[in-house]
Image (cartoon, rainbow, N blue to C red; front, top):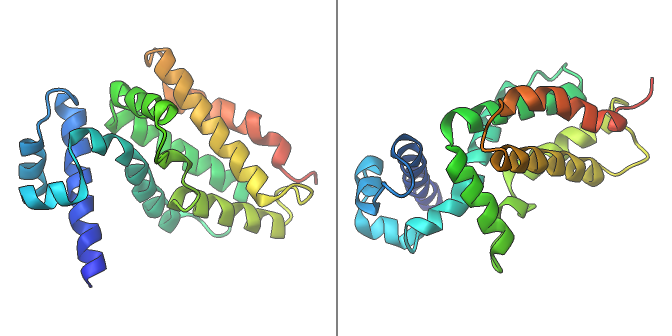
Length: 196
């Protein structure tokens, strides 16, 4: 029970922070506002985070919670390649509509220069576990190639997503990320479909 309470408190802080970052910008959001919005205490905030900057790496947590919700909506009869494309469309729509371009750019730049925790690359994340599960199922069902490993499929998928987000940030969001990805992701990953 304590573990769930811990996850809930940390999650409330993360959700409140990202909501405020999107609504009023990272620089204009204070720790006090995050504490108030989350309904937690100063002690709780500093128990989980050293300061506001520490919240930047939690975007991976936001993505993972989105993937957990999406996993529940996956049609078990749907082709696994199509499931992967669905996950991408939904995540990118969420990113485009609830995470500011500035914050996405900050996260990606922080991941490039950090020497410690690279949260986006953590293979224990829900993101990687779900993608691996789908890739393995796709191989078992003959929908995805079996002459490559599931890990190679997941790595290529994650690489394509990061590349698209990075380009969107470099382009300062001058196009719709979700619409562009809906065209590009199937083309990038088509080679992993099993030949029928």
